[in-house]
Amino acid sequence: MTTNSMGTTPSVGADSAAPARAGRREWTALGVLMLPLLLVSMDVSVLYFATPAISADLHPSGTQQLWIYDIYGFVLAGLLMTMGSLGDRIGRRKLLLTGAAAFGGASLLAAYADSAGTLIAARAVLGIGGATLMPSTMALVRTMFTDPGQRAKAIGLWSGVMTGGIALGSVMSGLLVEHFWWGSVFLVNLPAMTLLLLLGPVLLPESRDPNPGRFDWLSVPLSMAAVLPVIYGLKEIPSEGWHPLYVVSIAVGLLFAALFVRRQRTGASPLIPPALLKGHGFTPALVLNLIAALAMMGSAIFTTQYLQSVLGKSPLAAALWSLLPSVFIGFAGPVTAQLVQRGVNRGYVVAGGFAAMTAGFSMLAFLGTDSLWLALVGAGVLACGMVAITSQLVDLAMRSAPVERAGTASSLLETGTEFGGALGMAVLGSIGTAVYRHEMPASAPAGARESLGDALATAAHLPAGAGASLLTTARQAFTDGFQGAAIAGAVVVALAAAGAAVTLRRIEVRDEK
Image (cartoon, rainbow, N blue to C red; front, side, top):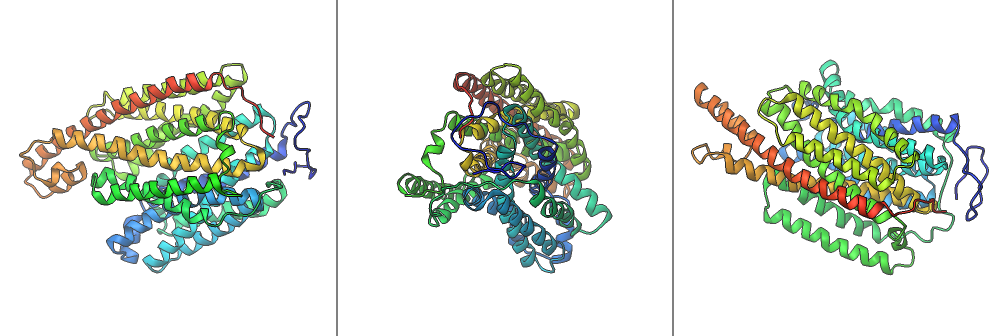
């Protein structure tokens, strides 16, 4: 049941003559919600420049350093479905504020961590907090903005903030570490979380499922056992190859996924109600959103390496350059929403977003070893296409889902995004790696034939002439691999464009009550 900004409870089941339009209070509340959303997305990349300072201060082992990086994303992905369903039961605002308190406390602990173990634990709690914040923000947007046009604009802004936050995180990290100490990258979270805790109870309406049923505790470990092994395997494959350990990890995750699905289909009060996936337009939105995430993350892993290792930019310079395409991201969602409001079929708009991604990949397929502006423009077109797609698919999915299941619906979309991103890194990353290894001559040192990073390390220990020659060859091979991955990505999103036009153009959008 949802309450509006005046504290009254609207009736459920009967369509009103016209949805109430959001006022200044709701838009202010949206601004407050964007702050934690931005920080959660930034925390994916915020350790980018802080790692050397952390290593010098805390002296983590190699394994601990990997866990400092990865524990946040793993916990976040593993708990999204659980937290979305929990928010529907106990109240999305309550879960959001609880998560904000946990996120703020963990940020303080991480900032002043005196050991690698403490920092890993703090990052894990940050992941728990992030898992509560992401679905709660979208579910509250669904309940605050009942007017379809206003909600579409709000979701467009939400999508832009999510996409831009990841790029902003690395830049923020570099600037803070340069002027302060590594713990400052976590302290920056505190003002926003404090503001949310102060203004949230005043501005945000509480909403929950009035008849949630019993919470299915067994589904929680099943969902984590399904998600985490698959994402772990997919993320390791690009750098380590199709090692049996990662293939087995994916297989184990898929086995638990089958058990999880069976539990949802047969349980009396499932974590993910099967009826939700049967909502008009929900499943196509879920699948297409996953494909868009696959394409975006699959390209991002190449773009970062291209700027640094091929063009020779410093990490901070590369991060600053990568912000340039983000300038246009904030316009993509609202402009797309305006097109739909003016009568353009949603299926064609989403197909247009995929077409833009196809154009972006096509640009990247023509990269040379000195194509800075082509890389930036291609990445910018990709990002704009991604935001246009995401804003429309999230709006479609949230309108298709019953309002009492808004948190669950949001968590499913975000879990699909995590899967899509990991799959994109695995598939496109593997294509790029295969091309790189094929293009490297057999006469090159063995390590240099594995990856561009290894080639850079090897060249540093060779005589000047031999090192320069190896670098030229390796950079060209990496660029060829980037081109191969871009061609594959273009094919995937071009097919998705056709699929979107076919599957979405006849879906009649309506709000589920």
